[in-house]
Image (tube, rainbow, N blue to C red; front, side, top):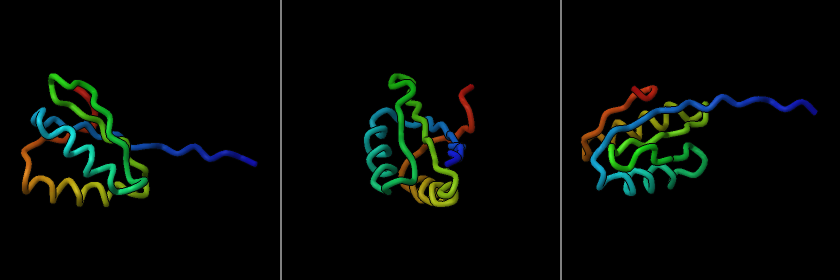
Length: 78
């Protein structure tokens, strides 16, 4: 049986430190769409590891989240 390699898309968010746990809880509550890792808690940078089939879903969630939180999205770390 041949294993298929899955490429996970990574997005980095820079946000207010006090919102890290909230965003992590919100994203991970959508089971299987993405995982959230804190890259730098002092700089308030988190990484979203997104399954390829769910990129558009995550983009919709982030668009809605922008209505309540201020953050920036980067494709990679500076």
